[in-house]
Image 1: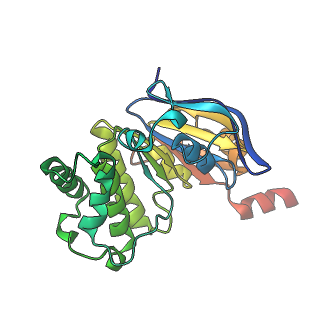
Image 2: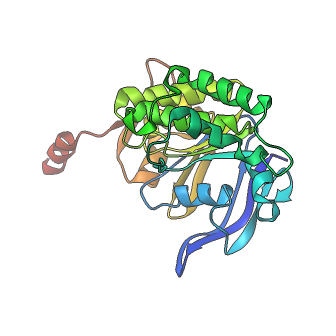
Image 3: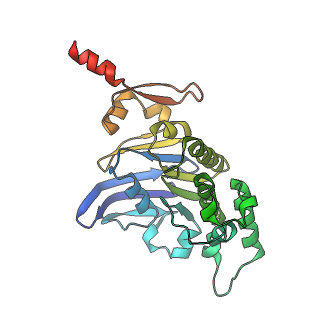
Length: 267
């Protein structure tokens, strides 16, 4: 039994059904990455796992409890979420934004404490933004802002972190910086679930991969065991070769050359 799983999910927005009878189990202490073409349902699945989208049918379970039955603060102490393109309040500083990660622990009988202060400090140190504590978030670079949002999620001190396209709008250097940080957080014992667009990044960083298309799971497992040219073409419609990554020995997707394909067709 894993901490986070879903059984028989039908997911829909109004009348548009995105997925039917979907089941998934997130391995504990894994870095699970969900991949697939645009509009395949990967972010919708993540929203359901985060209790942001109520399934039309089926149930998401967290630690054996139906996630929809958990009070919001109790859920936020077990599961952290970095949404896609989060909105930053105007003028807020890095320290104040990260401190919002301690909201699940506040209440009428428990106000800000030394434990909260320590959690915020440790979260900022973990992602390397301690020296930015007094800077307005809207003055930071894209990579710095993403690290600050990761610090907010870390400050919640949850064992499970859900990340919806954490590298969107970042250049290649900042993408690798954020994914290296995620890998380190996973190595420290956290369970991470991320939606990524780049299949090569997914193969490099994931310990467990879920490949989707049209609201269905085509394959799941360690990237080295499931990623091949056939899967890539079924999921993305992309003819390719899959070779060992010279840096990691993980699968590396090389798209077929358009000019070579045209030449072959003419002959």
